[in-house]
Image (spheres, rainbow, N blue to C red):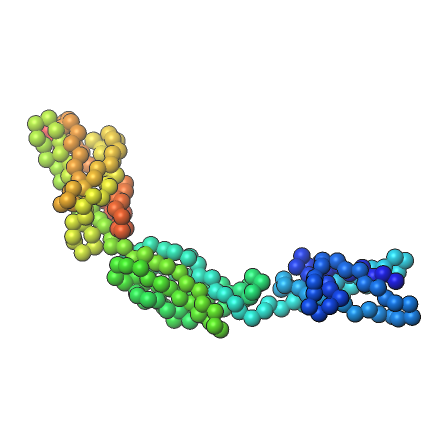
Amino acid sequence: MTVTLRSTSPQGGFSTAAAGPWTSTLDVQIPVGSTDAVFYYRDTKAGTATIAASAPGRAGAEQVVTVLPGPLERIVVTPATATLKPGATQRFSAAGADAFANAIAVAPTWSASSGRVSPASGPSTTFRAGRPGSATITASAGGAVGNATVNVSPGARVARIAYATSGARLHVRVLVVDSLGRRVPHASVRLVLRRNGRWITAVSVRTNSRGVGELAPTARRGCYSVKIARVKSRGYVWNGVTPKNGYCVT
């Protein structure tokens, strides 16, 4: 008699030998005079699966099996990368998995190559950035290790917005400095210029070697203000703040 075996698990497999090969369905022969046949079942998906056996003209049979995750093989840290300014924080979480990507709850030990993490163990931690540079966040448990990379960039800010008139021009100057007060050259500053509360133009200016960028529109009567929309410079993180400013042309 031929008995056909199937499993409800997409990763379940059958074989007539302990070492395989494995197939999703298997036909086994029950010899005349015998009441059973030997087969092997392997499953790599954790959870429950139902093995069904059927044969022509015979009532079918089912067996429910529970598949447990294997040993912890890897830890994935989320997010994998982050960019922070000194003193800023980022929360990281860890997820464990066995060799077949089955989820395993983990509470790893956390460490950082620079900066600080708190708590030092658990499913997640908060990293506080230290000095500028690259930091590696490490989660380890049961011989498995997961890492994340943090780029700690100096903070950049617009320290001052100054106005002056010269002839028919209004000169608007922005000064960009880093978190240590040092001037940032070659930064791109996107600013929005308003007159009497109304938008005039949005334009990008680049700072010179002294960290100063300048916009020189035609000076018309009215009161002006600037909103900083963006500051971009390689290796720096803008703090998102526009200094209080304003100037009136009479």
